[in-house]
Length: 170
Image (tube, rainbow, N blue to C red):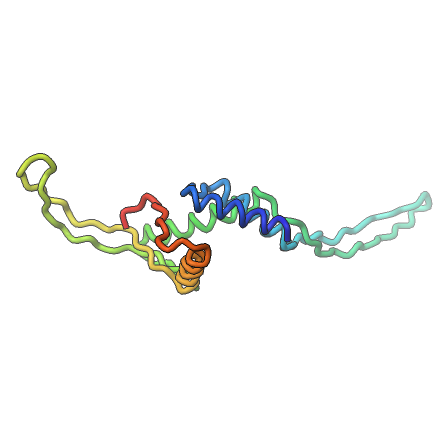
């Protein structure tokens, strides 16, 4: 429980300074969460047959039953899982298929129609062709998280919270 409190304090400090979580920190955070909550991966041990013979030519087969055991997830396991999820999402979007993760949100493609703009520093018009852009719609669970964060800022006494810039254009 103490490690959860420490990680919450680290997260609070990162929010205050505006530092973003990178991929390595995400993987390590997920691995720590799985370890702290004793979430383990199943590992099957196959059955084995031992052939025992003596000097007289008598043969005896002993079968050792296969069993399942639980092993902790490693950082490499978590990284492989995240890479696989991202690969599946990217392949779906390449085919034009939307991806919906219940409670988290939906990823899809949106067609941005052609338009014309004025070049910076001149009066010359520039045509920008239509194209597809990625679009993310937030799920209800993410909206609730944002609301809880907003309420925690209000409880801390920050009347006008400074938003954290994510570098996006949305």
